[in-house]
Image 1 (cartoon, helix red, strand yellow):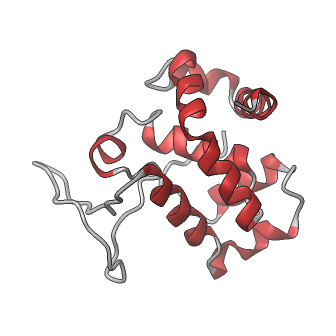
Image 2 (cartoon, rainbow, N blue to C red):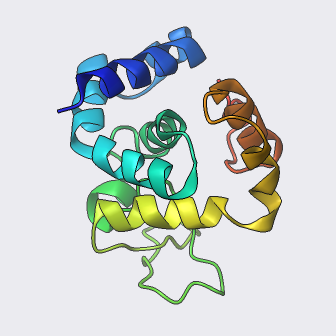
Length: 155
């Protein structure tokens, strides 16, 4: 296991939002376990597409609540990716009171890959103009471009 990477990710997460970690629906121990389970996918995407692995992990942790959200548990969708009209893969069926339809993946790795492919689209190209080590820029950029519906996404 790459403990250096794990410590970098944890430090980056704590740097982004020391108080937000307490407000989430997961514990630090759950976050550490989630990182250990999925860091290899984030590193693969970083190497393949030049997206910071710590940002990928922070996104996955936030969007899936460390894999505890229904989308992550039952659909392997760790980024809350909705299934638009152009999505050709498997889709969720909205539950009672739900209106959103989400993408369904065969594995967590597919979810991480699809998230990277999504970030390679034109609206996000400006993110690739700064170094991968500028995590704050990446997170602010994702908020500005409205990657997430959460108004405090970058924190």
